[in-house]
Amino acid sequence: MRLLNYAGAIREAHGQLLETDSRAFIIGQGLWSPWYAGSSMKDLDKQFGRERVIDSPVSENATTGAAVGAALAGMRPIVFHPRMDFMLLAVDAIVNQAANWSYVFGGQMGVPLVIRAVINRRGEQGAQHSQALQAMFAHIPGLKVVMPSTAHDAKGLLIAAHRDENPVMYIDDRALYEQECEVPEEMYEVEIGKAHVCRTGTDVTVVATSTMVPLALQAAGSLADQGIFAEVIDLRSIKPWDEACVLESVRKTGRLLVVDEAWKTYGVGAEIAATVADRGFESLRAGVRRLGLPDVPAPSSHVLEQAYYVTAEQITAEAAQLLKAGQTTRPALSIAS
Image (cartoon, rainbow, N blue to C red):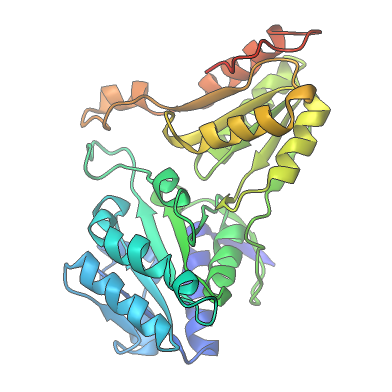
């Protein structure tokens, strides 16, 4: 074990996959440029050659379609989209092709493809460069969607995604690239579909994704100072997600707050809230609460960004409100938003 940052863990996973699997290759925009991929792809083209680390033209749909075809032909491609926003130009290849082929072929053939989508937030980048669209793709049958929040999981989930027999969307957020933790040097997998309980607690369950996990942990520290003990769950995998882990936690705490870095309406938080209301209602002592972005595009103003994005202080306040609501009684039939 040694300390490695999030971007370095992604880079190491890519390198080990290329080194150990002759079927692996990477294709996408800006793979030879640190401006696009940051240090997460540094010098991979120099190490493995530009026939296996392919800097593609600006054509998201063609690039992704080529990767789908290569996967069907027996290769193990990773297609890189430096901005998730522009990956929307490849929706046909992802949704109509990659997600459906295994079903169309009656399970006789899969599409072992990793679709790496990068989220860029803040920095006054505005509406077309700041979107987190995981809920859109989690809605699609045939796609798995993962969102690591730590360097350890960034490496392990990328390796697991590469080894999966069907398409996996791997979403990383550049806001996490400098965060460090202990990461094994050897190859390992983090199981897709398994959440991680980052902090145990008895009073309220906080389920978080991606960049919201460190904020949730920060909020849990503030809540502990108030005598409120939050259990923080890093979902890690959006589709499939670990229903059993969340329901077990809610049975213990009786309260649930879901925090996601995307728009709240029709988001990941809505799915988790609905499932808990459906399958764990008898455990709830207060209505489920969700935190997400307001239903407006991302602003291009630094001042407005401070009001737009979720903060640790908001998570703390929402969790504290849950403790005040329904201390001893079951919740009303509606779910608080």
